[in-house]
Image 1 (cartoon, rainbow, N blue to C red):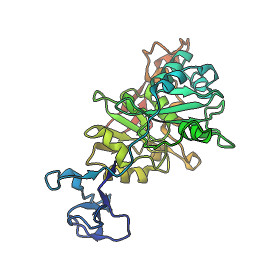
Image 2: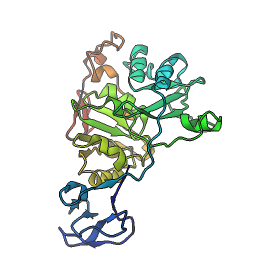
Image 3: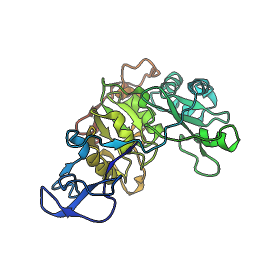
Image 4: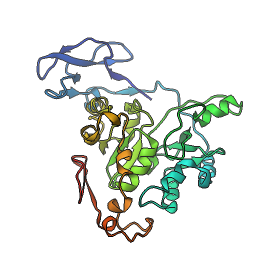
Length: 327
């Protein structure tokens, strides 16, 4: 599905209906190529004006706001996911998760399974994208090293459908992605969005106040994916260096959901922390400080660790502990 009305991608700007500055990007009808009425658009003076009006926010004005332009999505059989959920003893990502402070093998395996994270024959992680209807849209295969980091040399990244097409087992496949972890989302908790699938999995245990889902890429935060979260409260946790891009996306999509953007990492990070994400911060801490009553965490005789506690403010995106603050 593609949206009929989109913000103009050219460099042309118009006077803003609110502040009067010539910094206004208008909406364009992708079918006719014509501009929408001059009140529909976004002022790019994000810190001062913040005017934004989308045709989709005024359904009475237009009979339709989107049209079926994207080919129908292809799906994998659900049985493929179920058969891959195991063999975690050879899954390098799951094995690393089990070594994190306060984690256990049982918790690492349970968390991976809940996120539909499978294992390939050669020990890679398979991140299955399962949509809100339970349909399997894609399977991303990533190779991790023993340190929990992605291997970025040689053959270390693939898609299930691409692999099958190369082998001749699949003729065609229309990839229409959704958020990783979307199958876990309901109305009982707000949603937190990160870039990496691994980060969503890790953060779900440290900060279970949210449903943690992942875009799968820096540019994976799209309008099409966001429609699955219509009307929900959403917090974005961009990687270091991506804050401004995701802040702009939050403004663009604020007619879809109640979106906030955490600048926690941007404020904390030093020059050496390029690409740093919230999981890089969280794994420095013992999980027992965030979930002291978890049944999965191994016992400890260290009183200092047992007394450690962490608190998260979902409104500000700030994490604080009883012995230091990340604010």
